[in-house]
Image (cartoon, rainbow, N blue to C red):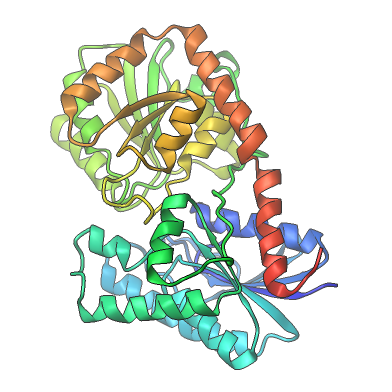
Length: 409
């Protein structure tokens, strides 16, 4: 039986932030299953508020309504909070008057959207499917922005317990995140742990010789270590930047940082201060050319902050695996990414802060044969096909939304 499913979010396609892309994948699949899906999102870009999107749009059958005064960029925390509050208030009002509402799908990004979901759920008596993509106040505590035990932290944890109790289905991204949630409230029997899927319908392994993006942007014969995606406080790359500065003597090695976010300033400041010959910065690349830019790498850098295991789940590892490239993990062990790298034998690991170890590992990577690099990439692609494919994971996720909505299969 068809249901009306309301999605509350800030970021949505065509915004390049991954949460919006994943939300649309799920929404489009739910439409294909015969449901009516309506989305409320911000009218401006999350990373670049100068980008405006249509206020009313239908994509793949999904009804999208974008709300004004709901995104002022990420440079100022007070402005981000203000945008979140204004978005929350508008979503509350709109949600109260959504006809034939059966279920609300909401994620943790931004933190204000779950508050709107709770409000609508209480008044409309409809269930919630809660997609836990990151944890707050855990994230801001670990980043040193607020103190544990402060009034804002206590208020947010109170809200966390309310929505964890109210949600009919909860989808954390990894086992570490589920364990953190369990400490906040008993959620036994309500969870389904699954990672976010790669956009493997837009990515594929492309050889360097057949890659026009690489031919345009990379000198012939260069070995490229690439970081592609959001640069955040929870995904620092400082250790690799310092190692790169000391490896400028290797003329064939290049470090390419693509994307945006608050952490990109560290990359750009390093380039401005030192003018290195082997470090380059580029903006987000168009979604349509993602398979070319990702495939231009020889090895992909993935970063997970030491203190954010189970708090955030950087998902760029899946896109890198989908294009058949090995992984250089900068972060703690264990974490979700170290599990994947070790289980599938697809890369290397270095800890944050150990620049000498980073140089040693990078030198090992440079001496790895092309045949072994390709074998690692092929194992990465096989893991995507067998375990992490979009078709499998998006389908399993939509099963959870339908369970929350009362659809029996």
